[in-house]
Image (tube, rainbow, N blue to C red; front, side):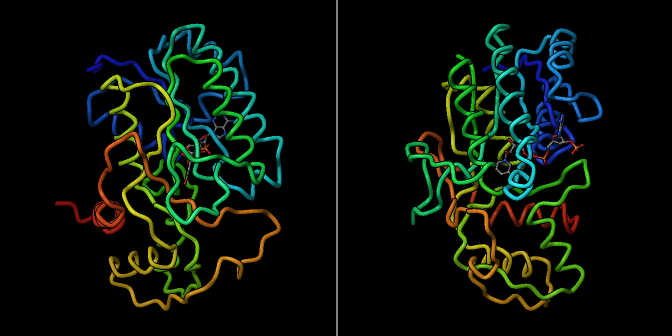
Length: 288
Ligand SMILES: NC(=O)c1ccc[n+]([C@@H]2O[C@H](COP(=O)([O-])OP(=O)(O)OC[C@H]3O[C@@H](n4cnc5c(N)ncnc54)[C@H](OP(=O)(O)O)[C@@H]3O)[C@@H](O)[C@H]2O)c1
């Protein structure tokens, strides 16, 4: 067990940064959270200064442009954040013997497989987001001996900034009484950010073998069924209509079925249990 840790979390105000901080606090693990106000990750000088100053044994880099459309609109930003900055961090971590944790995404798959993707499945870049995230995986695996690449599916949870993911938007629309059309052919394994962070911190604390891991709540569900479940848990009566992913036209390729499962880790709790916990504690505020 490796409990005497000193972690830097880059991107601390975002979804996973917030979750990693929460889990570190809960487990009394020493960490420093770095927001965008604290550091510009593309500045190698700032990154090096922070590493010198805090002398971490672990760096978790949650800085990203974690969705497809903005990456396609402005490719220079994901190139800078996912490629150049990650390459620099990977080299620095290798040089200084720091464990590097670089999250990745289910978007590295083409979405054509019927079943959830495992760590053994073939990746395929289909858009700028996935191409740049695949390159970040390659840099980390090439330069670092001590690394974890946790691939996440669609995530939800509390965050310290004002950004909104898919689940946040759905919850807002439900509260506003809006009706929705949701794709029933788009499959995923939506995952609570706290559960994802718990798994990754456990990998670190337990000195599990370095490498790539799929980290997801157990199960696979359509977006439509997942939204219906959120609506039920919130006791709402909005109309949710079935649609097909192709009804939401996009010129950008977006993988259709991107649930994840691991052949290396024991399954964690189901997406149903995790969602119930999130809605009760964080959305409705009824914790037991
Ligand atoms: N969210 C998902 O559903 C999802 C799914 C699969 C994989 N992932 C992966 O999980 C990781 C974390 O994603 P996330 O959803 O937590 O991202 P996020 O919520 O968008 O957070 C990104 C963080 O990076 C900060 N940041 C942005 N640009 C920066 C810059 N130039 N320099 C320094 N900090 C900067 C942001 O600051 P501000 O608060 O100022 O914006 C924010 O704290 C990423 O590697 C992503 O690819 C996410």
